[in-house]
Length: 325
Image: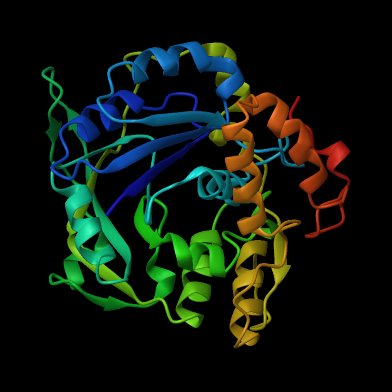
């Protein structure tokens, strides 16, 4: 079974070198690698130089056009970019600052062959030795893996972007991630998992399917430029998250309101904020690849596929007032 491994990044100091090294050593060999980089225009040459060390096929692209570019995080848009490009039967996501054991993709593939979406787990390490190995410390194993030590079926809301995979057919059937979540962070993966459960796609939690993080990664060996800092995810998140009144009467992060709305709409599996049908978007991408259309030219065409709003649905603030200075 072919897998598409996708990394979405907007970190000024990513560790792509870790993922490339880890993927070079995977026991499962039938996969492609896709990096969707929110800072593509800032570091294209450096990342492509790193990818020359890869012994697997790869695609490196910027996020597809979004009204949130330079304004706020747009993770759903980035994930949908990966969905648009992927050619595998199962799509595997990981974060941009982690390592994986050699059997990581094999574990995802074993579940994929049974038709499951997979929620993996992670270990967070405290520091790194001079030889590059991680040092265990106060952080350790993620909480779900401490409670559930054996693989088992789980709710779709357990799909977290740090380590999960989904059947491509299920992704297409629910129209990918909901881009109404863009502009803030949180909830988009849980929403996606709930919706794929509603079309009959089962999800499993595997505590042996692990990625490894460094809690304080410091500077990357190959990509660390101060001119990218203003575009970094952490800079975009310095603004206080916007809030909405929840069903409980509590005021909380606005994306939590979207999750509550989804729970009320018991049969909904389609997206609310996508101005496209993902299956059509994938066909357009494949056609552009066959015709050797550049990514930049193709993205110019995609500007017509953006949601036609000019303000934030959370509080109707004009997007023109929110541009990062």
